[in-house]
Amino acid sequence: MADYEVDYSEIAGKLVSCPEQCGMCCLCQPEVLPEERKFFKDNYPQFLVRTKGPQPYSALALKKGRGSCVFLNGRRCKVYDHRTAYCRQFPYHLYASDKLKVELDLSCRGAWGNTGNDAVIEAKDLVKRADQRIIEALAESKEVYREFYANCKEAGVYQDPSMLRMTVAENVSMFTDLAYLSRIMDMAQIEPVMALSGTRPETQLDMESLEEAGRDLAMESMSSSDPLSVPVYCDKDWNWNMFMADGGKIEWMVMDDEGELHHKAFADAERIKLKVPEDDGIKVLTDYINILNQRDSFMGSVFSLMDQNGYEDDMTNAYFGCMAVTVMDLLWRMSMLDHFMGIGTGAEGVREAIIFYDMDRLDAPTIGAFV
Image 1 (cartoon, rainbow, N blue to C red):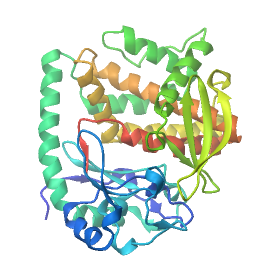
Image 2 (image 1 turned 30 degrees about the vertical axis):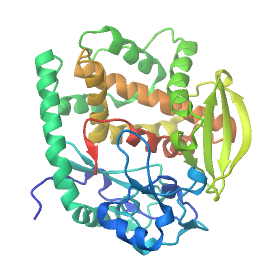
Image 3 (image 1 turned 180 degrees about the vertical axis):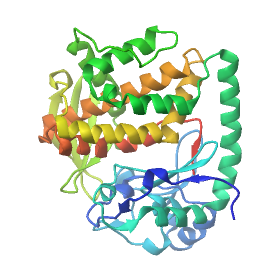
Image 4 (image 1 turned 180 degrees about the horizontal axis):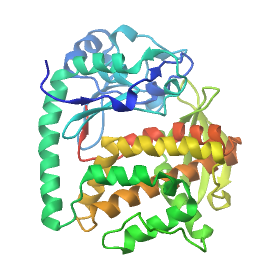
């Protein structure tokens, strides 16, 4: 029996399927673990590559260096029985902090259908397969977390994370209201230690400034000419949509199965107006905020920002501010998708925005590690 705690609460009671038409996970270049390299070296050496960056690793090649995995053919994997550990794990993410938490990537459309396999059963098998990697990752992440908490206490900015989560859960409606979001983002910048209780919404909402804030957040993630670095949205018709920002304009393109990009439309980012979800959309947004509020990777991302900023901000301000900023980013993306595709702002529109956004959220830097 492994001597570590695993939190399955995010996936409890959920069913997950793998739609054959999708292939979304095959756009994520998977690392090839040492024990997996022999198969690919012996059988497909031309498709085993070394990634670039400060910590290069062995990975599978992509079509034209930017498309799907070379083994994806007709949206089906040619080496399915020999797929990598990271291919097997998607859409589950095993996040190591001071414990291990299984999180579910909601950019996978198979996570929304309430059909398929029991998520907890699947995740337990993945955890068992990754046992040694988990042990090694937890040894490092626990030490990082201990050091982080010590730094926070020394700087006088530490707060109990469980209390922060409880406060957000008790005041979750504030994070779905633009007037409250605006006030929370302002308070996070100016108050020494902010509190949600007693907070009042902006009485004169500056929509222009709020739209600019949401636009800047979303545009930052799309400001790259490299298809591997921009968010991908797999729509209901299984198209791989990419949005690239340059000089205040956004280009919408669709990538085909061979890695070719096809232009669909341009839009002036400033003409995309921030929209408010309808009542049924607010329900979906509230559920998503509650998921984020319980994710250890979201908390770890907040901690990473605090560390980068030299522990100048109280943990309360950092956490509430990051939650508000996250919702603003999501709402602007919903507005952008509605501008291009007419997804609307109801339950379906918010759900599609989450499908577009969640993979980016899980890719955010953290002080922990995904195993």
